[in-house]
Image (cartoon, rainbow, N blue to C red; front, side, top):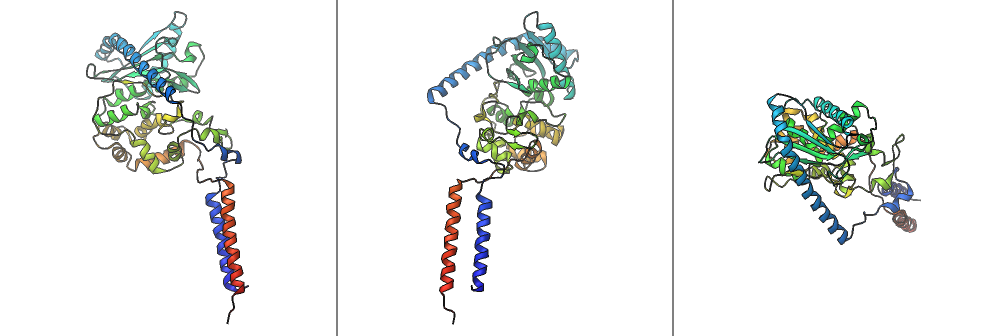
Length: 395
């Protein structure tokens, strides 16, 4: 065998190994998951129209309920500001058998969250109205604490009342059933319940560009107020991991997320930047008055994994002064966030998500038969080269 043929053979084998390493599925993906890589089924047009009409009805009902209780609570909130009394005002609408216990538990959680966030007497006061059952607010919008959910909407400060932010929703299930939660868990629930209103209380009314950007996104990045401590996301992975001890992924659950969300979670910085900038269309348009967040279980509308805590993490990392500059900026949102964080917002988000959860191995994963056919073609070409080289006459 000619010496030159050895180099061709070694190079061909090395090429086969490179092709296999690049195109074979990640080691974390089981064989049965190859058949799971399918797009999420789309709802029919009649069902989509029905959902749109139902959402319009919920928004109209929420506006009516919010207006009623804002008018009721505005004098109370104004009196508290005049007396320099910190904390949110709570109103519980429930049966006498539930209301005294629920008021004490919910108020303690709200006061604890208020103190943990470093909020005292604020220019924007917060009122919280919680009712029993779905009669108060028939909406699927939920706040999740260890799998326990409760419905909430937010009435933001507007031109008629610039100093009041109102939270209206149903009592959490664990309060209605008198299920005991530790003080820390109740504080976490209260931080989620206060949501955008806590940002308004601490940082005031945002600039027009930031306000319109958040309004178009239904405040999905400010759904949790928790800038006083690191974000805990253990419950978020409970249904995405087949085994939390080994970090083995349950791929049928992973692929229910939109591909853009998975790309950012897997470390694609440009995908993260696009997810954050989505909805930034300038300062035009009406200011948001009512926030009816999307259902967090509807993954089709998700833009960023763990996004409900995003702005809290930005405030904790950048510091409240730099976050205040972002909150009132007129720059494009991704540029303003990069200035506040002193690095690219896409790179910071990808790094943050790597700290939040275990690494997600993503890559090209064609059908094994395609890979075998490709490798077979390479081997056939190498064999022809070997035969041709062997028949050559060297003079």
